[in-house]
Length: 384
Image 1: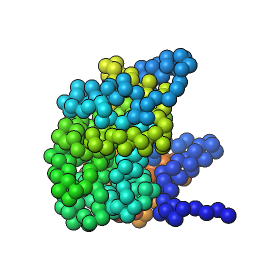
Image 2: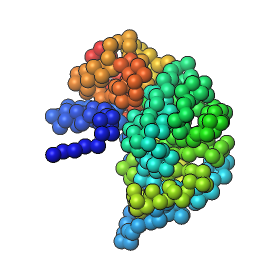
Image 3: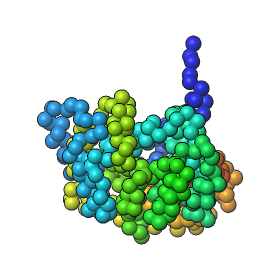
């Protein structure tokens, strides 16, 4: 007999992966599919990173590292915080993890008791609520909208807080909306949460992919928050599966114990490759790509507006547009299905991101080149 844990009834599929599966099936039939669904940059991993990984692998000495990561990499991340953001972060507080997902698992594993509530903005990254549930916590949605740039405020937090609330999770830049929290806003949220004995987790995995505003970190204003980051997005290392987390000092030992059991250690080749991520030549490549993302955003936004998509807020970070499609379709799921089948354009319906008007919204990732984005808009126009 198959016996599955009760919690799995609350774990929903990642709908974007279902769209991706259909896109691959259509491509196998010979269809030309433009991928605007998955949050994965189309650029290859930067050459200096690949070369650093290759050099390490040729040594043949591919063994475990400490559970918290290579000392040299933790020190490199600390220097990056100091040099780019003026934030002094002790390397001992930096935990290298198997992707940002691994960091979130460790944070929630250390912080969550059964029944603890976590406040999560809705719309928001779907895996967060499922990770909370996996640790027997209770995700509590904070419906947010364009009036606050789809970000929570202290008033949202105060209204939703209960004796069972453990903390708040936010993202800046956010997925799926691409909006940012200003540092003063993060501090206000931290103060609101701390006054109630809670914890703030800040997802900064799209940090660096900012347009028209300087990138920043919560760590420049607060050292009592959990900050999650990743080598996947700005650094272009999605498949290497490497991230990190900065934690308050008092949590390091318990996180280390969990990391030892969950992962043994992060990927050793990925860590050695990531040592090259902060070199001046690599950062020059990454900044050029950031400018390319800005050009893509600036090309796609007006093209979709002309078709009838509405954007209550313009993204200042990440590489997503969160489009209101209510003027052109009754259901984002039906529209996404129609676009992939009839236009060969893959997008993500709002159902992935929560229960806050998902039928009205479609997430569109500008992770392919500008010419393909223009072509995608033209295909959509023809279908609609």
